[in-house]
Amino acid sequence: MVGSPGRAVSLQCPAAILGSVGLSSTARKSCAGVQCPWLRHQREFDSCPSCPPRSAPHNDRLGNEGSPTIPSAKRYIFLLFGGLVMAIVSMGPYAALVLIPAVISVVLIHSLEPRAVHKWTFLIQMGWQTLCHLWLHFKDYYLQEATDIKFIVALSTLMLLTQRVTSTSLDIQEGEITIPATIMQLNRFGSEILHCSLPYFSYMLYFPALLGGPLYSFQMFKIHMENLKKSDQKCTIKPLWAFFIKCIFFFLLDMLRMFVRNCIIVIEQSDQGPLQWNVPKDILWIWITALMLRLAYYSQWILSESLHNLIGLGLDSNRSGQAPLSDADIWKLETTNKISEFARTWNKTTADWLRRTVFQRSKVQPLLSTFAFSAWWHGLHPVQIFAFILWAATVKADYRVHRYMGPRAARSRSLRIFYNVLTWVQTQLVIAYILVAVELRSFSCMLVLCKSICAVCPLLYVLMLIDMPSRPSTN
Image (cartoon, rainbow, N blue to C red; front, side, top):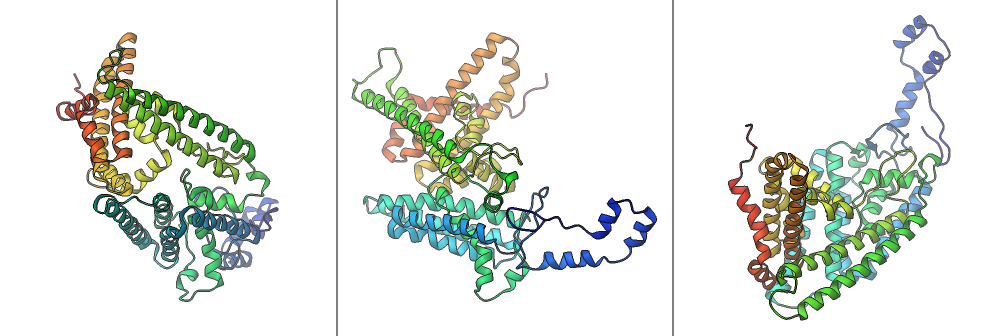
C-alpha cells in the first residue's frame, strides 16, 4: 500500500490481476517463469530509502525504511519539542543528564550492526545511569547534603529512558525493527539521517512518557503516530473523555492517600504499646504506610496514562482490538493472595520489560538475576538490595507454597476460604514490609523493620523455601 495518509492505493501485479479475472492455469504457469517487470519495479520501489514504506497490516515486524511523511513529521516534532521544554523546566541544567544519553542511543542505533546494537546501548545506558546514582550516593552518604529535587526528577526520567532505549535496541537485535543499510553506511550527518532518526528522537523524549507512564514499544508509538488520521485506526474512546475520567480517578486516589497519611500521623502520635483492638502498633504502621505508598503509585500511574490518552496512545482501536496498556491493575494488586502474581502485576510494563530483558535471557538463576538487576536499575541503595533479594526469595517460596498447599486446600470449601484469607494476609504483610524498605531506603528505617514483628512474615516464607520441597509429592 502506498499513498497519502488519508487514502491508500493498492499496488498489484498484473499477473495477479489476470489470475483474479479468470486466466487459465496453463497461461499462469507460462507466466511463472518470466520475470515480471511490475515486480521488478516494485522491488526497486521497496529498496529506495527515500520512498515511504508500504503498509503491511498483517505483519508484526516494523520496517523503518524511509523518512516519515510531512504530517507525521510534524507530530514527531511537536512531541519532541514538548519533551525538551518539559525537561528544561522540570530539571533545569540536569536535563543534560537525559538529553546526552538519548542522543548517544539514537546515534548507536543508526551506526551499529543489529546483532551488536543491544549490547553497546545497554552497557552505555546502564553505565551512565549508574554513574548518576553513584553521585547521588556520594552526596547522600558521604557529604550528607540535601539533593536538589531537579536532580531527583532527572534521575527518575533517566531510568524511564533506559527502558525505552534498551527495549528499542532489543527489538532491532531480534529483527522486529529494521534500519536501512543505506543509512548505516553513510559516514556523514545529512538530512536523510536526520529524517530517519526523527521518530527515534521523538520516542526517546516525547513529553507524556518523560516523567512517567506505561512503557510503549517503538513499534506501537510509530504506528500510532503515522496512522493517526486513518479512519480504520480511530479509537473507540475519545482521548479527551478518557483524560477527563482518569483525572477524576487521580484526584480521588490522591484524596484517599491524604486520608491514609492522616491516619499514619494519628498512629505515630498515639501512646506506645498495643492498640485497643490488640493489633501491634508496628504491624499496623508498616501496613498503612505501604498502603499510602501504593496509593501514591496508583495515582501517578493513572495521571501518566491520562497524558498518554490525551495524544491517543493507550486507547483500544477498532482495528487491533487489543486492551490498552496500564501499570495500575488496582483490583488484582489489592486482592491477590500470591506474592508472585503481585510481582508480575506491579508496574506491569516495567515487569514485562524486566522479564524480556533479563529473565528470558538469563541462563543462571533467572529469578534472582531479574531482581538483582532491578536493584541495580533502582540505584543499588543498600537497603533496596536487601529488599529486592528478600522479594526474590519470597516469590520463589510463594511458588512452592501454592504448588504444595493449593491442592490440599481445595478439598473443602471452608478450608479453601481459610487458605485464601490466610495467604492474602501473608501477601499483604510481606509486600508491605518490602515496599517500605524499598521506598524509605534509610538505615534507621532498616533497623525499625528488622525489630518489627512484621519481619516474621517474610522470614516465615524464607524458612519455607529452605524446608519445603520444590515439587509436591506424587503420593
